[in-house]
Length: 394
Image 1 (cartoon, rainbow, N blue to C red):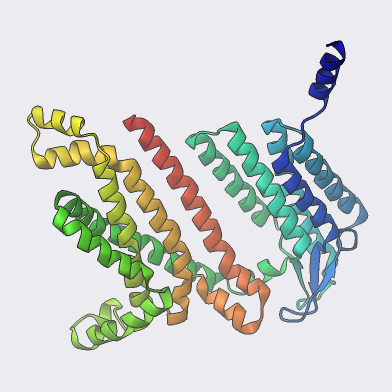
Image 2 (cartoon, helix red, strand yellow):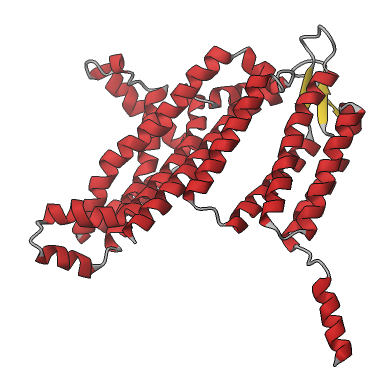
């Protein structure tokens, strides 16, 4: 018995290996074996991959390697969420500062054509470190306020890096500098498409959802029609809308003056609005259907009219489900608005498709990264709002 007890004690004393951490460790180890930065003679030339110790001064390369090695060990051996979060965040910071230093180190003096971009090793390492940070935040069980604070800190740090000039030599920033005015104009267009279509969907979809909830005969046909619209590919729906909107622009007085035409922002806006109706209507119906009948009967017994029950009891209690539909719509529309550039709708897709046509990777990233960041931020904010509204109704 003593032998078994000693064996059990020794086994308990050994550090437990985190299985998810093994995946992160493999990714970090892989990142160290891949090129860290890419050097190109100009924006469309083929690049040459440079490993960490070729892309950075020796001191900086050793520091980045040490941070990644410590993060690798923490991912496997440490079960402390705080330690994992700290080292994961430190790894993200080391990679961010390292790639900025690599761009400054590798850019020849007085050369405005050379381009330095992150290579595979950087992206794999960043992905692994971000996974570790996310895992640690899940283990810490941060509430909605904590997640919003983490998002605010992340945005502040990225803004600080951009403002400090630490990334000024990166090719992505060079692409931005040459298109700064156009970038912000397209950013406004992208937000108008995504948020405007969301507002329109709420104004139309919420009453339709209430109608479908109250009248069962309407519910089935309405949901079926919206399901059919949802199955149409985005480019096909854009194309379908060109003819009717072109006709409206030609034959309805004032339509062209307010921006309605066969190509451009109008068909993109209408398509996004149509795609948004199904999540809005369906979540409204589900949310209202989930309200306890006992609560509704109690409200009726208190003398509340049908409208009073709807706006003072049923919709507030269904709000978390309705907000979930709004979250789905906003994240979906931020992504779909990128495709609108193909029919002249503008938005970040303008840069993405220009980059594809020119085989310019950095221009592609200039069009792809902002929608990803916007969608992520929108998801975090609305997830927090859903959780807070759910607690308020509990």
